[in-house]
Figure (tube, rainbow, N blue to C red):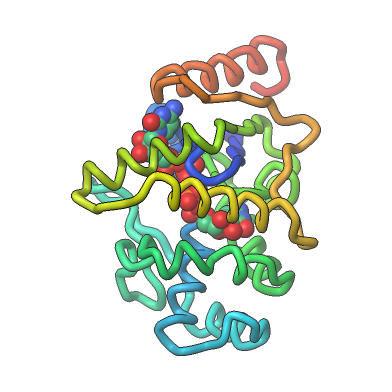
Length: 228
Ligand code: CDP
Ligand code: CDP
């Protein structure tokens, strides 16, 4: 039987990767973090001193350093041409430049193609910005997660604290708002809710509550006979 695909989109820190991982684990599905792919290209550009404005050179990086994932008991690892870059792609220098890199249509075209290949067999939970609209327009379940910028900055602040990273709340909030703006206003598949996506406002919701809400959507669609 062909398993369903679940697309989860939304702005930074809306909780996409956290809930997508739990749902994938509980359903026995594969989790794919598409943001990690855009982050990888940004990391490679920094490493090899490729300008963030040189679209063709960025595409060359994608061709020369294939991005792959490996599921381990410690979570998902990200590799570029075999090199483990899981930690490096979370550095602030990557976070602060990734929206510029991901705005280029040919960068997107290459990564979208790779993402569609991953999802072809089904049984995938994929999170990003354009999964429901562009990557998997036929996904059986589409979720659009949102939360206020204040709540999302609070989440990032707490996350940093737990990792022993010092951060300034107002700066985090500004960075999130800046990335929201860039991601939503680019020409190439901007961040937006697909018409058939279910909106979940997670402001004030715990991770468990969000997971339960998404599972209810899957169950309801199944009961309605939208898929087997
Ligand atoms: O985890 P966080 O929300 O901070 O971001 P991410 O999911 O790691 O994505 C990093 C950046 O990649 C986003 O701000 C977007 O600019 C870009 N991205 C995208 O354009 N399309 C996607 N499908 C996923 C991410
Ligand atoms: O992937 P995305 O950037 O959308 O967000 P995330 O990395 O999954 O979540 C950002 C932070 O918010 C993490 O530390 C989560 O544990 C936390 N979170 C939360 O506190 N409550 C939620 N309902 C969802 C996420």
